[in-house]
Image (cartoon, rainbow, N blue to C red):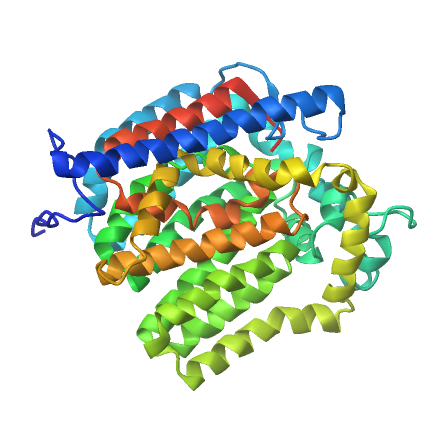
Length: 462
């Protein structure tokens, strides 16, 4: 293989260097300031949250702002997690730069899967993987009520609001039936129990990093995608990617966007149709993921020269498949959503204070994306200028769309707490901002240390 030549010096992207010239010291200090500001936000959320919970008991989380318990511990996954973190920090940037492109997304997927599994196993097999979808997210508790799937879909909305006969558990009621139906179908084909369901979420959730890499290469350039790869692998979000159904939702949304990026850059109606199919599925996995449309619209904007009538027709045709199928089966998405809002305010969502969570949710976002992303977002903001190289500017626009989607979700008031898992589908699109950062190994170390501390000091609820 012909050796890759080092990229030229760049105001937003620079390789590791033994010294820091005066001309680049100021941006590095501003990066550190952004990371420190993010850390202060988390500190404030912890201190204020503890006070509110101890005095008013209205947050319904024991270690605000995340759903977790203080429980320093180690487990079977600890040695593997530490070794993977060290290996990714030391060799990740070099491998990402030198691997043939066709191998990079697959390698990143494999490495991300190993990272997620090793972190989950810090809590042991049952507590970390096999038990979470039954003890917390409840999907596996109701598979028996889907023995007649068409009948269950027709009656789904009748059991959303609390007080109705046999109401669904909170997480089943809180999502369209596509989420629960996935686990029902896994059960039907013989993949029964929390172990199979957990690994389904882990493996698919880890694939989101490969999807993001593919989209980055299509919409920006290969160099940026390669620089982002280690950060996508070593994301602190891995603590909640294993095991949460939201990891599966994040993967569905990420692949929908990746296929759309490929469709508009290769002018492929087939890829557009596949993207539409996944977008439709995503909307029937989680109501909140309709906001992924903001990122999708940005992808269309960035690839506007490839957006032809045939491609749009294919996208819309694919998009219609899942909604039409569920509607014909008797499930009304809009009715279910309005009933969900009622159910949300019947429960802790109606008690949790908006005034705290509207900013503490952002502290959760810091924890799942890490200090490197805070610094990367600062650089992304400076890249939104006409003088910035085109690829860097396009990446900044993509990241800004993801941030906008996250902020809309925050302001809606329908994401009060537990956003460390709920916002995983948006968080994976903020991580590419780390591609702007010089000295990647130092920032990767910060990301890895945060993830390891979170997983070993807290017993997370997800």
